[in-house]
Image 1 (cartoon, protein in one colour):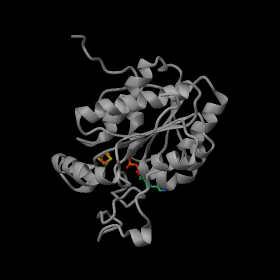
Image 2 (image 1 turned 90 degrees about the horizontal axis):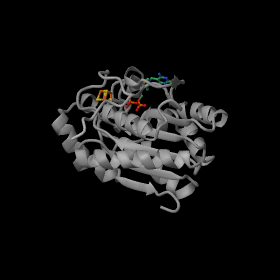
Image 3 (image 1 turned 180 degrees about the vertical axis):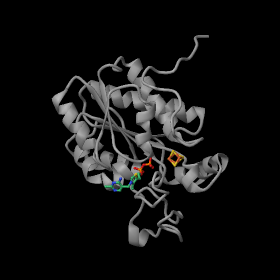
Image 4 (image 1 turned 135 degrees about the vertical axis):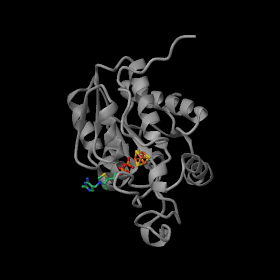
Length: 245
Ligand SMILES: Cc1ncc(C[n+]2csc(CCOP(=O)(O)OP(=O)(O)O)c2C)c(N)n1
Ligand code: SF4
């Protein structure tokens, strides 16, 4: 059997907590970029949050912007480098709360970029505050009696929003907590990047992920919570399929 190597874009090590889905999702993206032959012709745009730890484990070109702005930075890079594979690597707080305007406008304009977003139902790096992906009733640092959807709205499902209202090329939600879902998520990443390469328009892949540190659970308890609660609110699968697929 062929030996499985570390993708050239991925440095070993890193700062993610044990069990965190960030590292797995990030590695899958690195694998697919290399498999598509774009490791020397790509730009990954990121900002702040645990997602910014990506910089410690990424061997390729990347550029950091202010919190929430990766979609706008990626838009600028792509419009001036049309042949380059341009991606963002973000948390849900970055992409869907602080950066919702940037993410929304990039998708609305059908920019030829691909957004990768880790949905761990909170702002993780700063201590697990409530975000727009927090589940109804979920306790966080800023919803200590549980999220009240009457006063804070219901969980935001951005890929579904793209399906309903925009002309996006591809949108999917995967998970990375077991081998079956990891394999499927890698397929979604490939579809999203191939859509960009083919010039079909905006693409996004969200990965639902555990955050044992801010959920205040063990890794096993976190996986159980993810399967029983989080996946009940965030359905996995391809949400916008590529036209002609
Ligand atoms: C404009 C601005 N507001 C707030 C912060 C503080 N801040 C830094 S990281 C972070 C949380 C990021 O959460 P998320 O994007 O979900 O990523 P995760 O840590 O969950 O991967 C926040 C609120 C900041 N750096 N800049
Ligand atoms: S705090 Fe949560 S999201 Fe951040 S690295 Fe740790 S487990 Fe991952």
